[in-house]
Length: 166
Image (cartoon, rainbow, N blue to C red):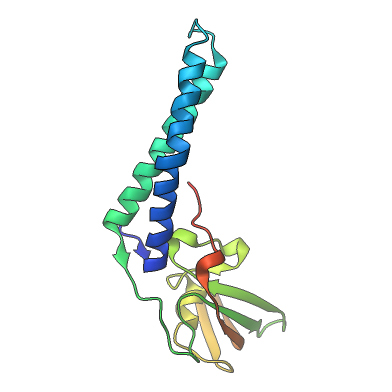
Protein backbone atom coordinates (compact mmCIF):
# COMPACT_ATOMS: atom_id res chain seq x y z
CA UNK A 1 0.00 0.00 0.00
CA UNK A 2 2.69 2.45 1.06
CA UNK A 3 0.45 5.47 1.47
CA UNK A 4 2.05 8.69 2.56
CA UNK A 5 0.50 9.54 5.93
CA UNK A 6 1.12 12.14 8.59
CA UNK A 7 1.41 11.30 12.28
CA UNK A 8 -2.05 12.82 12.69
CA UNK A 9 -3.51 10.44 10.07
CA UNK A 10 -1.95 7.47 11.85
CA UNK A 11 -3.27 8.68 15.23
CA UNK A 12 -6.81 8.94 13.80
CA UNK A 13 -6.55 5.47 12.31
CA UNK A 14 -5.38 4.06 15.64
CA UNK A 15 -8.34 5.74 17.37
CA UNK A 16 -10.74 4.21 14.84
CA UNK A 17 -9.17 0.76 15.30
CA UNK A 18 -9.53 1.06 19.07
CA UNK A 19 -13.17 2.15 18.74
CA UNK A 20 -13.95 -0.70 16.36
CA UNK A 21 -12.29 -3.26 18.66
CA UNK A 22 -13.71 -2.01 21.96
CA UNK A 23 -17.17 -0.77 20.94
CA UNK A 24 -18.22 -2.04 17.51
CA UNK A 25 -16.80 -5.57 17.73
CA UNK A 26 -18.58 -6.52 21.01
CA UNK A 27 -21.88 -5.15 19.69
CA UNK A 28 -21.47 -7.03 16.40
CA UNK A 29 -20.73 -10.27 18.27
CA UNK A 30 -23.74 -9.76 20.55
CA UNK A 31 -26.01 -9.08 17.55
CA UNK A 32 -24.70 -12.21 15.85
CA UNK A 33 -25.27 -14.30 18.98
CA UNK A 34 -28.86 -13.01 19.31
CA UNK A 35 -29.62 -13.67 15.64
CA UNK A 36 -28.17 -17.18 15.84
CA UNK A 37 -30.38 -17.94 18.85
CA UNK A 38 -33.50 -17.32 16.75
CA UNK A 39 -33.28 -20.80 15.30
CA UNK A 40 -33.18 -21.88 11.63
CA UNK A 41 -30.20 -20.13 10.02
CA UNK A 42 -31.14 -21.02 6.45
CA UNK A 43 -33.81 -18.29 6.26
CA UNK A 44 -32.64 -16.01 9.04
CA UNK A 45 -32.04 -12.57 7.52
CA UNK A 46 -30.99 -11.06 10.86
CA UNK A 47 -28.24 -13.68 11.16
CA UNK A 48 -26.84 -12.94 7.68
CA UNK A 49 -27.04 -9.16 8.27
CA UNK A 50 -25.28 -9.46 11.65
CA UNK A 51 -22.62 -11.72 10.15
CA UNK A 52 -22.05 -9.30 7.26
CA UNK A 53 -21.72 -6.34 9.65
CA UNK A 54 -19.24 -8.26 11.84
CA UNK A 55 -17.16 -9.21 8.78
CA UNK A 56 -17.16 -5.63 7.46
CA UNK A 57 -15.94 -4.35 10.82
CA UNK A 58 -13.13 -6.94 10.95
CA UNK A 59 -12.19 -6.11 7.36
CA UNK A 60 -11.96 -2.40 8.19
CA UNK A 61 -9.75 -3.15 11.20
CA UNK A 62 -7.38 -5.24 9.05
CA UNK A 63 -7.33 -2.53 6.35
CA UNK A 64 -6.42 0.22 8.84
CA UNK A 65 -3.77 -1.93 10.52
CA UNK A 66 -2.18 -2.66 7.14
CA UNK A 67 -2.29 1.03 6.20
CA UNK A 68 -0.42 1.92 9.40
CA UNK A 69 2.05 -0.95 8.99
CA UNK A 70 2.97 -0.01 5.41
CA UNK A 71 2.71 3.78 5.69
CA UNK A 72 5.45 6.16 4.76
CA UNK A 73 5.28 8.82 7.47
CA UNK A 74 5.63 12.34 6.12
CA UNK A 75 6.13 15.62 7.91
CA UNK A 76 3.11 17.90 7.80
CA UNK A 77 4.94 21.05 8.83
CA UNK A 78 5.60 23.84 6.36
CA UNK A 79 6.82 27.40 6.40
CA UNK A 80 4.20 29.85 7.62
CA UNK A 81 3.99 31.68 4.29
CA UNK A 82 4.34 28.71 1.90
CA UNK A 83 1.79 26.15 0.73
CA UNK A 84 2.26 22.83 2.52
CA UNK A 85 0.38 19.92 4.07
CA UNK A 86 -2.91 20.77 5.82
CA UNK A 87 -2.96 24.28 4.35
CA UNK A 88 -6.11 25.65 2.77
CA UNK A 89 -5.28 27.58 -0.39
CA UNK A 90 -7.63 29.89 -2.27
CA UNK A 91 -6.68 30.22 -5.92
CA UNK A 92 -7.96 32.33 -8.79
CA UNK A 93 -8.12 30.66 -12.18
CA UNK A 94 -6.49 32.88 -14.82
CA UNK A 95 -8.79 31.83 -17.66
CA UNK A 96 -12.09 32.93 -16.10
CA UNK A 97 -11.25 34.75 -12.85
CA UNK A 98 -13.19 32.30 -10.68
CA UNK A 99 -11.84 31.39 -7.26
CA UNK A 100 -11.86 28.14 -5.36
CA UNK A 101 -10.34 26.86 -2.12
CA UNK A 102 -8.47 23.59 -1.74
CA UNK A 103 -6.92 21.89 1.26
CA UNK A 104 -3.69 19.94 0.79
CA UNK A 105 -4.11 16.53 2.49
CA UNK A 106 -2.66 13.04 2.38
CA UNK A 107 -3.95 10.44 -0.08
CA UNK A 108 -6.07 8.69 2.52
CA UNK A 109 -8.18 11.85 3.04
CA UNK A 110 -8.25 13.07 -0.56
CA UNK A 111 -11.58 14.07 -2.07
CA UNK A 112 -11.11 16.36 -5.06
CA UNK A 113 -14.84 17.07 -5.36
CA UNK A 114 -14.81 18.15 -1.71
CA UNK A 115 -11.79 20.41 -2.19
CA UNK A 116 -9.30 18.03 -0.55
CA UNK A 117 -6.30 17.45 -2.84
CA UNK A 118 -2.97 15.70 -2.42
CA UNK A 119 0.53 17.01 -3.05
CA UNK A 120 0.75 14.32 -5.76
CA UNK A 121 -2.20 15.74 -7.74
CA UNK A 122 -1.34 18.11 -10.59
CA UNK A 123 -2.70 21.17 -8.77
CA UNK A 124 -1.29 20.12 -5.40
CA UNK A 125 2.14 19.46 -6.89
CA UNK A 126 2.14 22.87 -8.58
CA UNK A 127 1.04 24.72 -5.42
CA UNK A 128 3.47 23.15 -2.92
CA UNK A 129 6.10 25.56 -1.67
CA UNK A 130 4.60 28.66 -3.33
CA UNK A 131 3.41 31.84 -1.62
CA UNK A 132 0.43 34.18 -1.78
CA UNK A 133 0.56 36.22 -4.99
CA UNK A 134 2.49 33.59 -6.96
CA UNK A 135 1.13 32.57 -10.34
CA UNK A 136 1.48 28.83 -10.72
CA UNK A 137 1.37 26.84 -13.97
CA UNK A 138 -0.54 23.55 -13.62
CA UNK A 139 0.02 20.70 -16.09
CA UNK A 140 -2.67 18.02 -15.99
CA UNK A 141 -1.69 16.41 -19.29
CA UNK A 142 0.05 17.62 -22.46
CA UNK A 143 -3.34 18.86 -23.69
CA UNK A 144 -4.57 20.40 -20.43
CA UNK A 145 -2.62 23.21 -18.79
CA UNK A 146 -3.75 26.28 -16.88
CA UNK A 147 -2.51 29.02 -14.56
CA UNK A 148 -3.74 29.93 -11.07
CA UNK A 149 -2.83 32.77 -8.75
CA UNK A 150 -2.58 32.01 -5.04
CA UNK A 151 -4.94 34.49 -3.37
CA UNK A 152 -5.03 33.28 0.23
CA UNK A 153 -3.24 30.76 2.43
CA UNK A 154 -4.56 29.44 5.74
CA UNK A 155 -2.72 27.13 8.09
CA UNK A 156 -5.52 24.88 9.24
CA UNK A 157 -5.77 22.23 11.90
CA UNK A 158 -6.59 18.88 10.38
CA UNK A 159 -8.42 17.57 13.47
CA UNK A 160 -11.84 18.15 11.91
CA UNK A 161 -11.13 16.05 8.82
CA UNK A 162 -12.02 12.40 8.91
CA UNK A 163 -10.26 9.46 7.37
CA UNK A 164 -12.50 8.23 4.57
CA UNK A 165 -14.01 4.79 4.88
CA UNK A 166 -13.56 2.15 2.21
